[in-house]
Image (cartoon, rainbow over all chains, first blue to last red; front, top):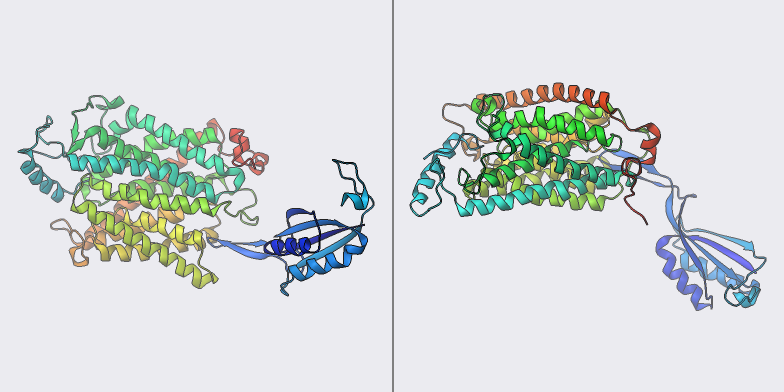
Length: 112
Length: 439
């Protein structure tokens, strides 16, 4: 099993969620986060006071998937989140050791 | 038949009012001791205006300021405006009204109306009940110190703020209100201040400048980002100020008549002109028009047209608005940075500078050549502008000296500033044990 962590542009969340649902993903966790990469920040100006805003708002999406689903999940997220402009985000893929559903006690693939 | 000279009426208008009042007196039964009688139209408008001016401070100014500070201090500025409203109301009742408007000398009013003594349901002030006149003036005494809050926002100790405001009201606001409106020497000299450009705005702007310099810069200023936490609140507050300002300016006629109507339209024109001017200057300098810019420009225009509102015509208002937009923009954006003082919310840049621009230009655009109400007989434009300048300089000098002394006293008693760690934590928690947003 793998844990896919995707950092995406906030306005792409609905597209990504739909794309994942379409391939049968039935759960995910979403967090509003801030950060920067190549896109860096932007400047804001208030009555002549200019501030560099380094951390931009992004969405962090976490999805636990079976090994054989990984490629399709990666494909779904990248194609849905892509704008071809700087700041589209990144995917981090981690090995997942164990999954347990709290309600039933089911484990691993059964709990996904 | 006489109208008391203790009002902001120009002499000419007073005599006109006397004639109108005399005509109406035939049909009217409510007679006061001095012979003038109540006009229900005037009274209705002044009741409305009084509510509008209170609406400027709470909620208008409170929201305008709260939006511009960081979220950890939002409640503290709203609390300060609210507490000032309560304190000034009580001081006005106890001695403020008497000191400002009771018959007295050139320098200060009398003590005849302490605790509103002698004011009954039948007391008249011109054509309106004295209760209404006094409450209307009270709302001006409320907003003036509340304006100062913006200059020292995010760092002043609440107790010191309250003490300073109480003393400042007593020794600065009440005397100057008397000098200009209460039958004192500036009014006698012919200084024109229809609705409070000098008494309210220059006065507050100067006190704010002195206060922000004496308190010192906020920790981290100007290197650290201190962006407004909610410009939505600021825009809502600015809009409320604009609406409420009709009571401030058109209400200062103290009657529902043509002058009040003119005061209303010139207020609207100058405000729009100043807001557009600020925004276009900003657009040109930085590439984008900002919401904070349009709101700031609007307030600058409202301030500048305040002394002029009953005296100038629409063309004069347009020029006053444009000039105010330019001057307030430069003062808030450039001047503050050049001198390095930390006037948190630009009380001096908008109210001080806007007030000075308006006071001087009132002397120019009152001239009937520019569509104004006309200069007093035998007064040239030059001499009127000179009188306006005297009013400005006197207010500035008196305000600087007294504000300095009173802040020193407040510092000695409570300490003006919160500790540096407390400032980092934010005044909401430190001063009030509360948080603006629990989300």
